[in-house]
Length: 95
Image 1 (cartoon, rainbow, N blue to C red):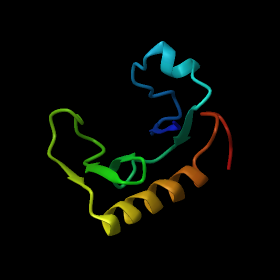
Image 2: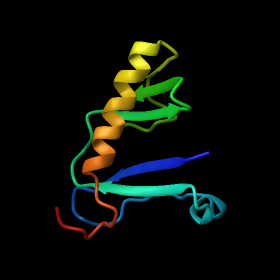
Image 3: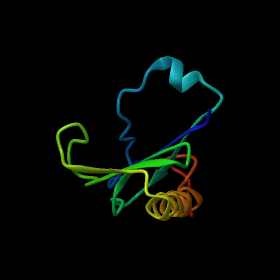
């Protein structure tokens, strides 16, 4: 199972949430960074289900959309992949 996580940081500093140390050590876990607020916070599960929410709100407390609709899943997966390709592997990396 692959875990890919995109973190945004407006001021160039690391903005990581507390992650389980086991997860950080997992070779299938990858993090990339973007310097602007994303249009949406997304979670994709096995390319079959997605969660879509406001990126500036608390994920646990804010309204969100959870869907298994194949077309919506493809749309969100494409958004994530595009963002992943343009994200930096290192917080200090230049584009």
